[in-house]
Length: 566
Image (tube, rainbow, N blue to C red; front, top):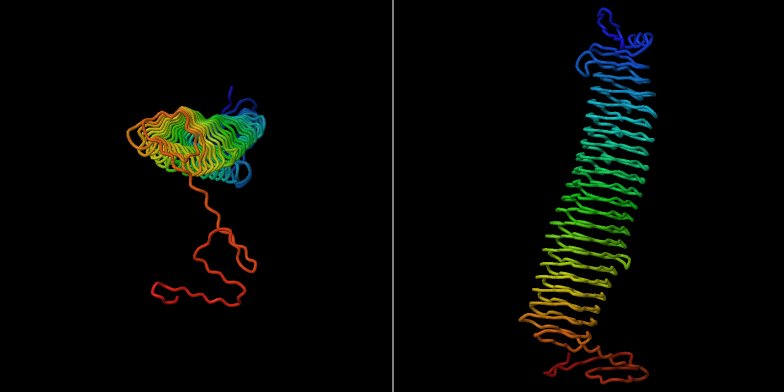
């Protein structure tokens, strides 16, 4: 049987003038107790033990506990609070030492820094409540938070630490100076929450934390939408992050799964994997990223499947010894490069579709910079579809490029290997320049001004390939380039089949068009050498020269056609 106690400051018959008196009577009576409190201001600090319910008789918030200092509610046992407003001036506004606590339709103002402190082995259930200014801490405790609001926390709005376990549903977090939710060496699940205006990451997992974020909306945050650091794990699913510095960031060995989420208008990156971060990213969309949509750097190693990038500056960038696998990728309308592999990074791409970007795929760096692309389609890349530079190594299989200035390009000392690739309607189909190397099998170029061009000191090994309807030349090998063109076919009604410098081997060429061989440019003749002893010694013919020796003064005159001296 629950005993009922009424607090009536104005002297209601049978009531208690203050809450402390009612609690004292309830403790003496033993057993479950319900303390009902009439509306008003109470400057009391409550110590509640046992099985006790505190309930406001008026509307939620009509009963205000506002002591001058100290903890407002010190609870142990099985305590339920309904409809009260608790204002803490210092320390913990609510301190749960042991047992279980329920707060329902409660407002807690933590001016002293902490709204609620649930200690180890305690359990707190928070429902339909509002927490302002202070943080809510589960330090080794467990809890359920439903339909609660957290506003203007001077620290983290909700912290789950030291092995705590908390489930949050339909919460709203706004204006936290640090994180909306921080999970450290603990576990937390967020479902259907809104987070906005945080000073740092809206949701943060660190120190081997386990974090699940499902169907949440994150907006207008100063740093990351969701952050995983310190070997944390977890799941981000069905979320939308907008106007964050980074949509989701993963570092230092963390390995989450991010699925079915949208990152829109992020000021720097949508997905950021750095400092040996890992993670699997499935069926995500990044729109209008300020710098890079998907960024792997500093040894990061993401696995990305089913990613769509729309707008922004750069689509996917793998740099600084990062590595990654990317499949089912779509990149459209970025103003810079769709795919970028730089500075010792390694990347594998499969089933890539790129449209209306300034450039398609670029590799640049030392010999440790490598990329592979299988099943790629590039269309309307204004500058070029694929380019390999530096000493990087790039391999393409079943790749097509349509429109643009250059289809496939390798320059400097880079290496490009092509298998079953096609270029259509580009100004230059395939370009090999500098000291680069090209190895190509079963390549097709059609409707280009020049199908294949090697220049400078490039090396070309091209076989079983076809060049059709090229305006100027099917294949051109210029400068001091060398190599072999074997079993190739050139068709069309204009231009030449091959223009070459005589340093390339033509094997089994099939063409109705002309082959033009240009003699190699002669090596520059040596300048005549002149050795001065007491007079010059000539080793080659010298004309129109004037010499003087053993003179301290020389006067030179030259006659013009009319005899005048100059």
